[in-house]
Image (tube, rainbow, N blue to C red; front, side, top):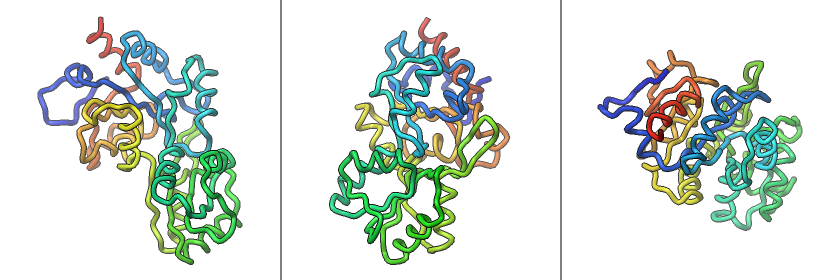
Length: 276
């Protein structure tokens, strides 16, 4: 299945011919839970065979890049460390550049906290200047209360990723956006987010890959993150219907993808027509 949502005479082949680098979401796009999605590995192999650069980018801040690399390898695809980008890196890079001497309280898993410490950010548990909230699957009420206290006292409130839910094989579980909403309800303060679809992520990806925005295609299953990152710029966005988004949602959505496919296998099929 291939669908078009832009009023243009270009075909999917015309558009994909121009893409020089693919940025791929993970949850709901490449895999779902511990299950690789049909066509994913074949798609990656097609890119490699034709020397088309690609990287993975996940908003899921509950783990670190090493965990995701191991997970993908276990599912049957061997990738190098430099192929994995994560929202953790985007917010860490921003803090290092713009808040180098601030005391940062991290409400997140130990993986996220360790990433901050490894980057030599001043992580504290008291008297914070900045509160960073991630997808904390180890959420402790005491830490939520601390975060709210620091924010009420004037600490800057930052969210690693805006996702409300994380897709799993059994449905959805609350993600970083939901945790941030709870803190906003208590403090009245809305965070600035750094994962997809923020301009911070777009800037980070373009710098990392070296490509122009019109040369990059963001591929994912979520309208308000993976596809919304293309709003206001010339990046290509490809929605796959293997995760959260449903086709019927597009009728009432302001966010529209450049292309729609049932899965990565569908994208692979078009690439096979281009690169025979």
